[in-house]
View 1 (cartoon, rainbow, N blue to C red):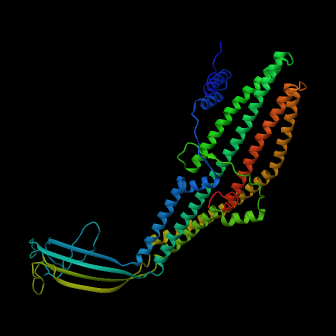
View 2: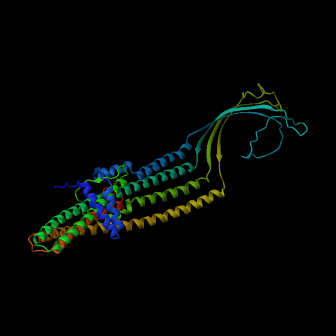
View 3: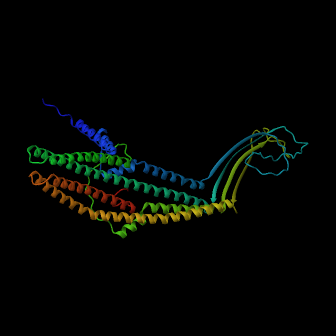
Length: 485
């Protein structure tokens, strides 16, 4: 009776579950969990993107970039606040009171804890003549104040707001470049994962062929049983590597989706030509990094902002000149010291007044302002130290990235040579094994050498791409890796 073979997916899951059980029995719980995850998790149809498409998507959707741009927009809005001081300020009031009007020659100061209405123009009273009978009092008016000359006070505040907006702009540029670098690294990690998966799949297919040859040779008596058991062990080991390679590729795709800010679970990387252009001159790379790295530009912007803050606080000790004009109508129902009571008994503010004047204000001494200026100067010194630290760190990062790229570029041709030699060696070992001249150990060594060299080549290509992107990020223009615009 002929038995039907199970569907491929069920067969693969059955073998994965059996392999996971063996791994658990062998004391390998982590590998067993990885095998079960890859066997049970559903396959995800990941959309493929080119690197420019991934970078464009990240610039439009990545939350970190959007947050930085929102902060920049807020700082630009705040920069309009001090400029509004040059516009006229218009105010109006309308007041009505029922109060006593017992005037006296007492002197006092107005305090914010209690509202004391002004009493003027009525007869002076004593304790014996004062009464509790109220009278009406009303006033209505409109006025306008216009800044005339602030002795640089408003200009200094505008400079502070503009400097803070420049800091936000530098931070947004740095965020965009950091996101771009993360996207590019994740993109090339996906390409490396695909190369690893391809090499593993090819090795697995060859191992199946070798197992079949060993099985046929064992049945015919041309091969010893150890050849078959070794071939079966190689197949089982490569099944684990296939699962690990597939899981690693899915993890890399998920990391790319996260770096882009995509709502997809996974994003695939479209294949692209390998970039083997040489690194720029070392001196040029270091000079560009010192001039254009966003960390240095942000530190310079912060130093400028702190310096502007010192100037703004100092300007608060200078005079201020503004013009004032108002038109009011008022009336009081109390008996005046001379003249008649206004029509309406104080309920109709029909007694008109106006004024037009130029006012000079000058805060001659304020210890609080002096203390704030001293604190601002200390913050400026701290910002200057931060700038020196940023320059040191950027120089170290640029030099490291340059050396990494140079070493990776020098290593890559040798890795390719190693792959070519290993492929030729595997072909010879395979031919000898099929002809009955070679052993299974010789073939296994050749297979291991080929697979290892292919994996090292994939890692080497990733190292070149990552170092190129890191150097571009350190140089601040990402011209090499195009990780940000």
